[in-house]
Amino acid sequence: MDNLLLKIDQYKTEISNFTASDGETAEAFRIKYLGTKGLVKELMGEMRNVAPENKKSFGQVMNEFKVFAEAKYEALKGAENSNGKAAADELDLSLPADPLPLGSRHPISLVRNRMVSIFQRLGFAVAEGPEIEDDWHNFTALNLPENHPARDMQDTFYISQNPDWLLRTHTSSVQVREMEKGKLPIRIICPGRVYRNETISARAHCFFHQVEGLYIAENVSFADLKQTLYFFVQEMFGKEVKIRFRPSYFPFTEPSAEMDISCLICGGPGCSVCKHTGWVEILGCGMVHPNLLDNCGIDSNKYTGFAFGMGVERITMLKYQIKDLRLFSENDVRFLKQFTSAV
Ligand code: DAH
Image (cartoon, rainbow, N blue to C red; front, top):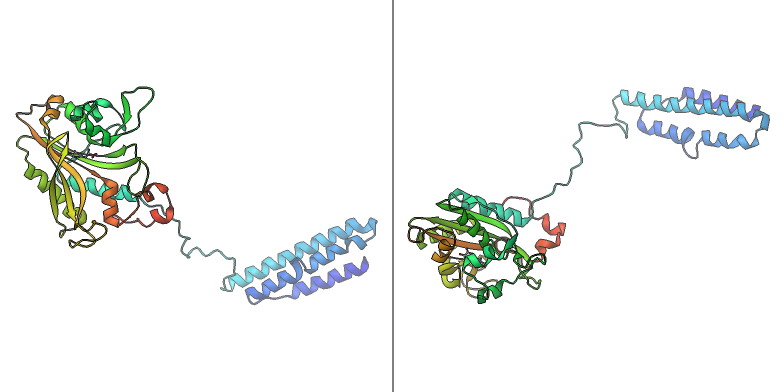
């Protein structure tokens, strides 16, 4: 035990005389005295050789020694810092912070917002309606009575509580709700989610998004419809993109048309995206059928209107050249984080 005490005294003197000029020497001190294989640990290990009656006083001496060595180490670090050399673990508040990963908007939201803002500039206001609709607003009021063959293309999900309730198949139902309010003129766009009973594939899904447009006033003509959609296409896809209308059929418009834009990939000559036609279909539209106006209590002799409806997924796929619809709902961050900026 005396032997040990002598050793400790010697180490103390050694420690007192120790000086450090840089971080490395301070670290060497720590390893020598305080490290896991250091002298303090080693001397502690001697405890088992000390006679039982001396264990207590030796323990005290050892504790003091340990505190002494630790205080010296702190002093060495402090001196070195005040010498102006940064220690490895010193906090430097001037360093840039670790970057926090930022979330990004979903591509469907980005494109929907862009679509909305284009139409808002033309004076269209946003109107919204419920996703769970009744038969009247989704079908019957839109000139699609029960057993109408055009209902076949829009099979959907019904609510078992009430066979009259269903998940809306298109945003055209919002048209009806707005017309029923009876405030004219109406100039609205209706963005929203819609549902269909479809087998999921790269080109179809059981839910997707649409933006519907409706303008009803006196003397609204097909020319107004064309010009409005032409403006939209140029703002969305660029000035060089062309449009064309093809006659079509929708129960809620007469005449009805589908609108194509010139293929964004090949620009006209034909490629696999446009199925070698040079044109890609983007929406359905037409002049509001007088029956709809009558159904909603609007004088069809005085008022006319146009309507259109398009899929947000479709526009997004064309805009970003995305080939598979399922990517939008898989929530794979590697896909989603590619769309950080506004379109
Ligand atoms: N509702 C139609 C659909 O989902 C799209 C549509 C076509 C909407 C013509 C309209 C329209 O307002 O006039 O297929």
